[in-house]
Length: 335
Image (cartoon, rainbow, N blue to C red; front, side, top):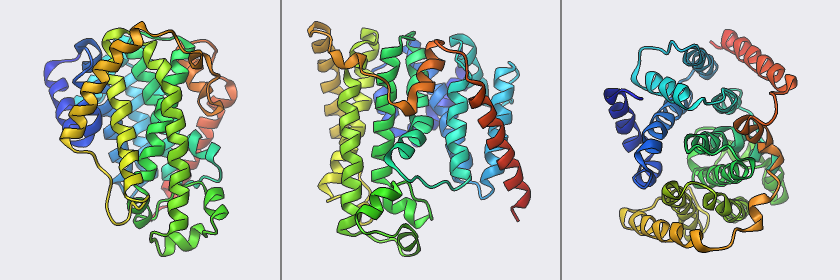
């Protein structure tokens, strides 16, 4: 069980830092909502530690050390760490899942660029689908097909975030659009970062990214139907709220420079009501064959880890060692 004071801290952090999830979490049963708040608070802490820190490599290495302490059962004496450790212990959370999140944050620290749509799906798998897989475990579901669809939803959400934040990211010197897509539209990524501004060509790239997101939102839905009935409204709500952000980007003509897409309280309430209705409808509908679609190649390792279907490949462990060694080297060369 998560101590009440630690849980209150997590709830407050999510209320201000992850409003879309906070809205959707109201439809989750308490047995899932409370550990989910601990999970999201730790993820929020990790994301902010890297985003808001000039020494990003050092920030990721510090998070690795904090994760080590969590899995040793001796978390740092801080509310988010204690709550996350209780969640890990109570739900036997495979370490590969939060470690995948750290890997994605390490890619941020290394200022990695993404050549293809597959590359950006691989990034999204780490920073978003890993969280979706952990949420599925919290619901007591380790079925590989349901996990694959949860990972679809995570990638879709992250692609939506990227589309919404193109302008904000570019002004901060960050670029998550696939370079290949930009070049297809005659855009030079380096020139764009040197002088970030909206153009119709950039809008077409954003539109392509959101088209992939929408495809994955639809592909994720049979997985929601495979979750416990009490959990479905909250996950349908998250699906609709994030897809709604993508719809707002479309209404803004794919321009994230002039204004940042967001959804209002009335919209969120409408999607919450729709989610409750859809949760009941899928209960009586025939199961969709899409549930059994193969996982995206980029998320397969998450499905295997969460389902405990395959041992962790030695090559993956070695890749993490090498990545953290690169971060150590980067930390020592930073001024």
